Length: 229
Length: 229
Image (cartoon, rainbow over all chains, first blue to last red; front, side, top):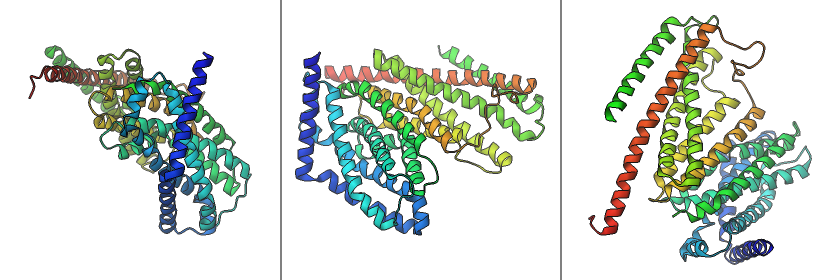
């Protein structure tokens, strides 16, 4: 048992480090996400043309919709490179635990999106003149929980949609309806912190529940999805 | 078998005629809302059948993931399709009823929004089934069905926190809730007949799906032997 969990950890670590190294050298995911998120920010600004007060009200929505759209760009690339050289087929016949692969991919995507958020946050502050009225550290908690919620479902659905004919379109069609409660939680919690009008405690709990539930379901079902022929 | 289906179609049609007479003629006119309240019978009955279908879809999907029986997959497809139809009827009737009674077509209230999200999730499920390559559909669709069903209570929780306008449960919802007996019996008759109708739809769709499966299996075997084309 202990050697089994040790090998699972080794697989997760190896896959994660490989993905991080490839990303560090190519910067494919982060560049496309960054540029995409930047475009969304600019277009939203033209579409709504908000004043400073209005932008505090709508910023929560803007930020998270931009990150959601941008995350889809990275999520779509998650499994594509593993298909090219039949890596997934090799993985299927190897004794390595499937969940180790899933966790590695999820953690990798999580790190990419968190980096994106750190890079984009100053831009949002500059473009929309944001100032936080509520407790700022809670925003970090919400960002981490919310990003995990998007990424854990997104990585799983990306594994589903690589088998479809038009995979780039399929992922958002699956991800958006399922992640509505998480998105609602992130948006409302962020808005209530930025405006300082309400407490985000309920939303933090909801996001935590969402994360636990969907991480469990994903780990429960990933093996079957990987081995689906 | 064909005869049996035909007879059951006629029986359900006759029962539907009977309930329509009951709903539009016999049942008393409601005191405050007037005749428009008669939508209630269809609204609640189709809502009940829709939710029942989604539950059947969830159970059939779990059974499929566990046993891999083609029958359970056929039940899953049939119930998802019928559920989406009844859920659409529920939403449309709801807006028709809301306009004269609440003065608005639609409001982003907990139950309305949850139903809409539920409908979106199962439409995504049906789209996903269309897009998969042959042979992988069943497992992947079943996995998504589990995600969808697990999501529903979380959606409800999140949106209830967000806002609520829909009346609280009329039946068994507290000391002031409850229906006049004649309205209650009409409603129960409708629910029973609609359940029969939904069951019949699922049964007919199930048989069609089974025929498709048998046909596909036969094609696959023929091409394996090199006879087809």
